Image 1 (cartoon, rainbow, N blue to C red):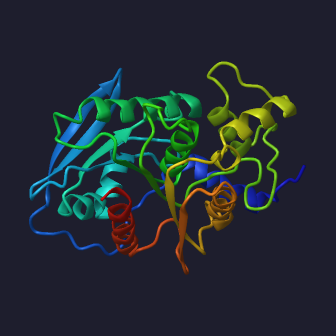
Image 2: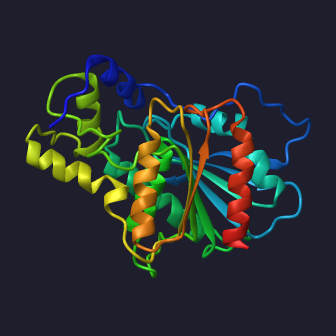
Length: 296
C-alpha cells in the first residue's frame, strides 16, 4: 500500500474538506436572465431542488444537475453553477434544468447521497408532464463531487429498464476511482483528515471501520470506473491538465473503462485547466453542444 507524503495528502484533503466550485473569475452576467427560477422545491424528506425553466421557447428536454461540491450541497453550489453560466446556457437553448441538492457529508454517507440523487431523478420523471419535458430523454450533469455522484447514478442504473436511467451523462473533473487516486492507493485506515473523510464518505453512518479488506470493498463499490458495464448511456468528461485536487487520471481511468465496454464516451482535456478555470463557461457551451447531439 502506498502512502502519500504530507504535502500530497494536504492537496488531496482539500477535495474532501473544502468547497469545490464551478465559479469562474471573469464571467459577464446577462442583463436579462434566460430562465425563471423556482427555489427549494421539495423532492424528498429534506431534499431540495431549484428549477430553472426557459423564458424563451422550451425544447421539451431537461437536465438534472447534481449540485454538490466536496460532498456538500448548500445553496452556494447553486450560486457557483449559476456564475459558471450553466443555467444561462442551457435555458437559452430551451432546456429545463433541475438542480438537485443531494445532501451533505455531515449528515449523509456517499451511498445515501447517491440514493438522494436517484430520488431526484425519479422526482423529475414523475413531474415530467407538469414541466412539459420528455422524462425518457434526460441528461445528468455534475462537477467534482457532483460529477462523482452523477457517474455513480449512471453506472448503477445499468438495466435499460431502470427507472433512474438517463440518456446522457456529462461531468466536470469527477473522482472515479477511490482505489487508485492519481496513481496511488491511499491508506485510509489512519486518523489524518483525508483518511477520516474518505471513510466517512464510503461507510454507513455509525458503522465506520478501519478493517483494510472491508474498506477496499467499500471504496471499490463507490468507484464508478470499477463498475462500468456494457449498455450504459453516453458519457462526456471535461477535465483540466492542471487540476491538483482531482487528477486528470481520474477521468482518463473511467474513459478507458467505458471504451473497453464499448460505451460511447468523449473526453475534452482543458490545457492548463485547474479546479475549475476562469473561462469554464466556454466548456459549459461545449457540454451543451454535446448534449444537444445526444438528446435531440
